[in-house]
Amino acid sequence: MSKNYASYLKHPVFKVASQIVTEKNLQAYVIGGFVRDMLLGRPSKDIDIVVIGSGLDLAKECAERLRVKKVSLFQNFGTAHFKYKDLDVEFVGARKESYRQDSRKPLVEDGTLADDQNRRDFTINALALSLHADNFGELIDPFHGEEDLEKGILRTPLDPDTTYSDDPLRMLRAIRFAAQLDFKIEPKSLQSILKNANRLEIISMERIVEECNKIILSNEPSRGFKLLYSTKLLQQFFPEMVALHGVEIINGKSHKDNFYHTLEVLDNVAGKSDNLWLRWAAILHDIAKPPTKKFDPEIGWTFHGHEDLGARMTPRIFKRLKLPLDQKMKYVQKLVRLHLRPIALVKGFVTDSAIRRLLSEAGDDIEDLMVLCNADITSKNEFKVKKYRQNFDMVLSKLKAVEEKDRIRNFQPPVSGELIMQVYNIAPCAEVGILKSRIKEAILEGEIPNESAAAIEFMLRIGGELGLTIANDPR
Ligand code: ATP
Ligand code: MG
Image 1 (cartoon, protein in one colour):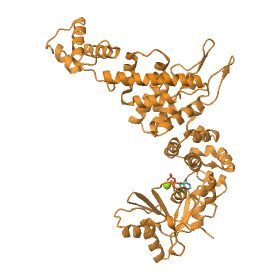
Image 2 (image 1 turned 60 degrees about the vertical axis):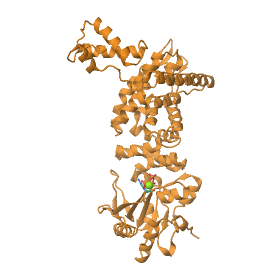
Image 3 (image 1 turned 180 degrees about the vertical axis):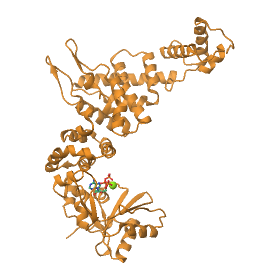
Image 4 (image 1 turned 90 degrees about the horizontal axis):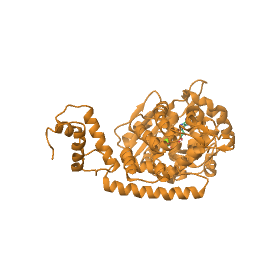
């Protein structure tokens, strides 16, 4: 007896589609991600409907009856799409695909439901529910995908070598689903991914990074990255991260494995924040450790300047990975550059001026920097971790106190360049810059409070020392 899930198809889109399919005696099915997520109890906003015949006609008719005005038709691909309330509904004619070696683009012809299921990536993504009234809600599951769903297994419908070399993006999708759903990739599939990893070269960076970002946004991203590493897929697009892997020993002294350390930091950040870019900052925070690594017989391993070099590497990496080069990149770059600063405070004696400097540089990203920095405290040594975390809490409360007192975040010196020029009746020149930075320094160092009257007094004193004459006294 085949299973029936009619009770899951209560949404008006399914009712209307079913009426049309039945009236016209068509075959059409809800298929793929929506069915998978429904059975897993995960909310899903995209519905894919596959039709034996034309997807376009069914889409148009469906939209009309649902009073949806805008339908996008992609004649060349035989697909159609409309939005209905908060759902994305996509219609496609069933197809049969055959692939060539050098391209992700297959030769496509009309096919049966079985052909269409064969070209799907995983058994759990090939599940179909019938929309015809004769067997409304019946599950068509030729590859035992429902069983795989229950067991938590990712398996390809065809031989994995065929599925993966036909479309290498599927290798990344396998790892993405393993990470998102906490599923296991079956061993034959894993071996096949390892074998076909270099085929990823025919996939565009945009597609690769889209999957990678989904891995990063999963609950425990380290799981996905460990798989990316062990299957050698990571090497194909992110060699800088692979370079973090491994431990070197000289004179019995070793350093920590920065790949696993980075993953621990990433998981720690993921436990605190869903911000994709903060998670990217975790991935990149130590990215320059391999190129800055040195062995000093006296002190052991050092990675001097890795935060600065890491910040300089960030735009290059973003560009290659086709990640946005706008404020998001700048934000990641800033966090990479500053990631050691709070911990330096934790280790040493904390002065107000050091806190003010950090606040002034981090601005509104100070909380995120502190999340990253706290996540960066990883060690096998419980005692060390505990001590650091205690000091860290102290730095946090000090940050709060100094911010309340001095409002240094988004620091704008209380005396502007315009005012300086007006007071001394001078055009823009070196002295204006000198005065501005002396005032800023004095505030950060705590010599004067962050207030306009005090800053003006200070300016007049320094102006005098620089030999400037007052033209308009601001007092
Ligand atoms: P999500 O929506 O969470 O990204 P999904 O599985 O729904 O996951 P979509 O990209 O929406 O992914 O694709 C819908 C369905 O299309 C999938 O469930 C799968 O059946 C099929 N599919 C998508 N991409 C591929 C691919 N590269 N190879 C084979 N089948 C695919
Ligand atoms: Mg989907």
